[in-house]
Every structure is written in structure tokens, then in C-alpha cells.
Image 1 (cartoon, helix red, strand yellow):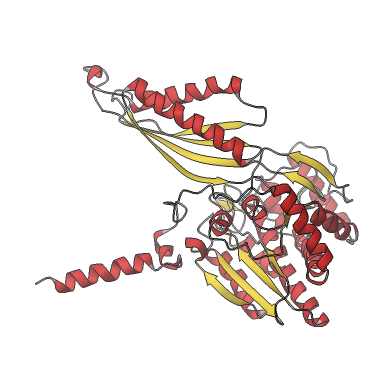
Image 2: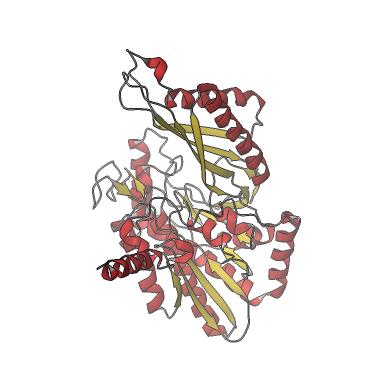
Length: 465
């Protein structure tokens, strides 16, 4: 609970999680874990910690997240009211609880292994920036999950459930148009409007929709459209996301979108630059792990107090929802379905057997990325989510550590679903790190790249006469 509350009280946006990552690192060091790397895969607020006992043995990973969201700061009260840091940033996706549960599971599993004298390795991946350009995708490209026997994670939700859920694969592109400015009233023929290129691109995307599969999602925003109507805009930009049920489908649609972008530039006599800056895989389910997780979930002492149910119903009342409170039961195993949302856990799942589950940390009917999630995450409802999730993951982790047949079955299911397809990172080779890393953190990206630049500049200055 200490981790969850400290992170909740210090909410930080993606790639800015200085305090949050250090909270996890502090607790891991004190628990006897070795910090294998910080600034992992070029991301300053990502890390890997590890604990090993004996020779050889299985390797099990956990995936704590800890970034927050803009505009969702809220007190631990059943109404919209500013939190400790105001409303600017808050844990409206529950990553304070998610991270605490994963790191707590590693601690519990360590104790169980010591008590049983079992060999093995527990690895904790500090998964920065899940909400934007998730660290897991960069870590997967670097092969950091390849030697695991399995990886476990959970997510706060309005339900207690696990199953063969598939999340969507996705690509993210910035489409930038460059034109030529001119006076829009006096001599517009001298200009070439970058905005018109962007608008025609948007129109082209709309004309694609009739021919797309029902699983495809295309959504975009204009991030630059000029500054004044009487000046022909010479720059314009669209940020577009492409989602589909798997990487193959996303790749196909992405190439079509790029063709539309290039065609729009030709039609408007502008230039276009396409920055394919991020992507992620769909989540590959694992039936063996799902069944094991569900068995442990079903044994939870899942109980809500009258005060907690009252808090949840008050949140629902504030949102105009039915006052159903918190889910009191564990749902049956969900069948294989694909959702429209995505997660960078998908890239982990294509490199090692991986499983996810959800536990109720918010009222029934409440969606993620809303103020009640932040509110519940700062009080006992969120505390129970962290504790219950740690119990489940530690239990499943212990089963995997001590049961070679279970590991074998999980691996067989993984290989069957992957069907021999090699993992191909959705990241461009030239993409070294996510955008938006604060400049003062670049020295912590694990490469010392910025430091080298400063040293070279200093040497040049000293060499001048």
C-alpha cells in the first residue's frame, strides 16, 4: 500500500515519472533486489530489477506501470474535487495500484521461494510511459523478455475478470505537410496551402472507411493548421492512430494511409513527411496462464465494506450511473474476444507467455481515464486492488516456479498461437527513444549520449586559441 499511496500522491505524466520510478526502485533495493539497469532501452524512467536464488531455475517477470494522466487529479472523495496536486495530473488509469500490485507480487514471491528453497529468478520491469509511447515496446525490441518463462500483469477495472482477451494492435503517425506561404487576399496563387494538403488527407481517410474491415479503427486530430486565416499556411500536421485486430492488418492499413498522405501532397503541390513514430502489437492470450490466474482469483477473500460500497455508489450517483456499487464476485473466464483498446503488454506477449487480469478498483459502469478511478485509487478500494492482485500474481508465479509441467503447457500454448511468426518490432530502427523526454532526464537514458556531446563541446572550446 505504501507504494500505491506514494505514487498516487506524486502523480507524474508519461516519461516524467522521476519520483514514481524512484519509489519502486527504493522499495526493490530495500527488499534485496539488484537494480540491473536504469534508463532502460533509452527511457530514463524505465528500469529492470532482479532477484535470484540458486543455480538456474525458471525466470518470471512482473510489469509495474506508474504514469498518470492529464486533467484527472482528484481527492480520495466521491466527487470531483482537486487532489493533492490539483487537477492537472492524476492516476485516472490506476497505475499507482497496478505498479504496487506487480512490485508487491515480486516481494511476496521472493519470500515464498526463500521459504521453499526453490531456485529461480524474479525480474521486475519498470514500465514507464504506458499511456503514450510505452517502454515495453522498446524493451521488447531489445530482447529483454526473451529469456523469461512467463510474464504476469494486471490492470484496475470495474470488474473481477480474466480471459482470452485480445487487445488491438496499433500504429501512430504524424503526417506533416509543408507548403508555401502567401497573402490569402492579395496573391493566394503564389502560395501552396499545407492545410489543404492535411484536409485532403483527412478526406482521403474518410473515403477509405467504406472498404475497411469492421475491426479497423482510424482516428486523428489536427495538431497544426496555420496561425491566421489571411495567411496561406505553410505548415500543417495530423496525428493519426491506426488500430486493428493484429499487426498484419495494421501494417496493411498503415501503408494505405501513407499512400493517401503522399497522394494528398501531390494533389496540393505540397510536400509531406510521414513520421511513423510508434506502434504496438495485439495481446496474445495464453489459456494455460488464464486458467491458473482464474483459479487463484476464485480463492480470493474478495470483500467490500459498507463504507467502500457507499463510496462507490456515491461516485456512480455523481456520474449519473446506476448505484450498483463494486462488483462482489469473480466473473467466469471470458472467451476470446478483441477489444478496440491497446496495450504495450502486447509486445511482451509475442516474446514470452503472458497473462493479464482485472480486479475491481472502481465502481461498476465507470470507465478508465475518469476522476472516480483516481478517487478510488487513493483510498481503501484501491488498497484492496493492490493487495488482491499481488496475492494472485505471487500465487501464479509460485506455481510457475515450482511446476515444470505448467511452464511447459504455457510455452506450448504460446508457440501454438504465435504459429512460427517471428517478432518484428513496430518501431523504426532510427527511433532510439520516445518523443517528449524532458531534457534534464536525457542523461539518465542509459547511453550517456548527451553527456558525450557536452564533453566534446567542452574539448572543442578548450582547444580554441
